[in-house]
Amino acid sequence: MTSAEKAKSEPLIDLQRLVVSVRRRRRMWVATALLGLIAGGLVAMLLPSPPTAVAQILVIHPDDSPTDSGTLMRTDVAVLQTTKTAGEALKKLNSTQAPEEFLKDYEGLGLTNNVLQLTVKGKTKDEALARAQAISDAFIAEYIGRNQAAAAAQQKALLDQRNQAQNELTPIEASIVTEEAKGRNANPAQLERLYSRRAELTSKISDYDGRAQEAGIGTPKVAAGTQIVDAPRILPHSLLKTLATDAGIGFALGLLAGLGLAAVTSVVKDRPVLRREISQHLGASVIAQLPKPPRFLRRSRAVTRRQRVAATLVRAVRQEGGSVSLLDLGARRITAALAVDMAGELAEKGPVSLVDDLPKTNLRELAGEGPIQVLDRGDAPMAAKERRIGVGSIEPGTAWTDLEFLGTETILVVRAGHANTEWLHTVARQLADRRIPIIGVVVVDPDPRDHTDGTLWDGLHTALRGRAGAVPERTAPPVKPVEMFPREKKNGRRHPTPYRRADDNADQPTKRFKPVSPDNAEAL
Image (cartoon, rainbow, N blue to C red; front, side):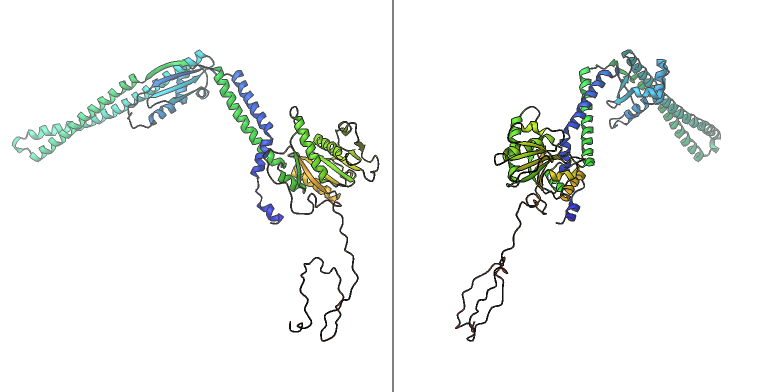
């Protein structure tokens, strides 16, 4: 796969890298979660919830049925939360507050098809109770009045229909009396038609009277049944419960905000954290890694690990005399300690010195009294068999031309997630321009769950294959003099072989054949 195809196949957002970056920023989202927890607790303590009163109202619906799915109760809740009901309650309270603002202080909830729960907030307990009572009275009065008006309107309509039928019945009665007065001359068919019409109108008038009476009877049932079944009372307030609830909400919101911020910053900043990414962007393989040094406990274990890595780096560099540099990128203390440990390993085999060019670090104090000599850059020329380890930095603002004086080859000590991709490319390009090969990369503070491969297999710029001078140049094999050796006789004559160099087929495999005797040479 070519580099272009590999770049095309890479996803826009690497989920593994995103998860690792978010986990490495755990201080951020843990801090935001704790801030949310503290903020929620402070809100619960400094801004306590106002007193809340609760009342329950029994509502009788004239058209109620067992198959109702709560539509009537939802209608009552909607009517409760209207400016008309709020205005009537404010009139009872003699308050000048706007009904629109008052609606924000109470709400209704349908518990069943006939029970309505009212929740009201107030500045004090007495105010909350008074508001709940006023709203309940206003709702009941409005509900009963609305049902009475509907019943009265229905009764009036039925009575009007009855009166109309009565008015139509009067001339029919007169016609019947007139036709019966004729005696034998009366028309039987006409009388039969008048009798039928009188019976029909009489039935309608009776039906209208009954329905009007039923409409009038339904209103007292609604008025008597709709009432407050649970008087307004103050809800018990628990400070601990409120504190725990607000703190939990604040913790959840802070955690979500921190995780989102960590994910966004990890994508925007584009700082490689995986071994695979660091090796690809620097163009060198990861040869060792060190965890973040502890501040208090387990220092001896950290020192043992660092010394083991220093021994590995000593084996990776050339064994003969020369200079090598350790360049720091985000791990200044570990770089200095590694250089001192490497110098201690090399001091057993010959003279060694440290070149201190690392800012904000005192190598002399770390080296202490011993065979290791600490020099400044350019103090003295290097002896024939002396080994030098230059310690420098490749942080932004580095003088690239000075890196040549620290060592002919280098080892990079990079802290994961410290530099962005662009700066890693800059480091690799500048070292390549200075012809300083990178032996390898030591990753500091890697993710414990990072099992990606940090080894590069393509290109001559990788660790050992890119070390100019590490492998001695091959010398051409000596050219042997041209020899003449006889060919087998053919027809009693010897034919000389052409001139041929002895190393023409040196790299090609050869195969020996049994010599052919002169007797059967021609037959073969």
